[in-house]
Length: 309
Ligand SMILES: NC(=O)c1ccc[n+]([C@@H]2O[C@H](COP(=O)([O-])OP(=O)(O)OC[C@H]3O[C@@H](n4cnc5c(N)ncnc54)[C@H](O)[C@@H]3O)[C@@H](O)[C@H]2O)c1
Figure: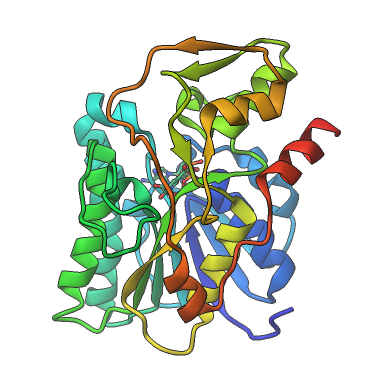
């Protein structure tokens, strides 16, 4: 347990990854946590067990309404509308949530001349269909959706603004997170949540799993608590990093194999979705070397534990 006293902010705390990060930090640290969420895709039920904990202050607001970051040592920025297909439709809304509201945080830091470390949840979507497998952080950028572009744009702003101001940031490019609460039955955006959560939910409802395309597309699935640990290690690293790290398991599973793993042969094929990569596969050597992070949780174990509950 980390006994240090730190004051931190988590944006998007009521979402899938934010709520798991909250669980992790409540358990592993002694930090005082402010969580902000506008509940657009998130759900207060995700953090219900901590609402009475005096180490957490939850504020229902958008990031644009945050008026000061002065009291924080670290800011974990997770708030976003992380959906590929809707980002083609409600374009301005996604630019606002994924880029402008993040820029607001940087403007506050500059205005207050206070630069808490910003741990930014970026995305491997920036690589599109990569040319290098496994994919290192030096891969060329090839955004296939407005969402991927907005997430990457903010990374680029961080780099550019850090040339003029003493920004202290770390970008974590997540591959394919899965874990508890990835599927929220109340969330209308569920069609875009982790395929692991969607498949487990279909099985629970006794419905056949729907495999897009021929199911040969491969994903690097990483457990959400391993992501939480990467966030923690990025925050406490003693030196300024100002760089991006891949966070994946460092192995791949095809969607068809995943379907078979969850429900034998009860699956059906549906149309392929445009704008999605054929393969995601992280080269994790940079984060392993610089942050001493390694994924600890296996997809097969999570699936069998969830199915046996
Ligand atoms: N889940 C993934 O597959 C994945 C992959 C790569 C990167 N990411 C990134 O990780 C972060 C968290 O994603 P998630 O899967 O937990 O998504 P999520 O939708 O479950 O959580 C996002 C949270 O942010 C909140 N939010 C949205 N806009 C907001 C705003 N303007 N102000 C305040 N709160 C706002 C939502 O209500 C929600 O609770 C995002 O930045 C996303 O881009 C996710």
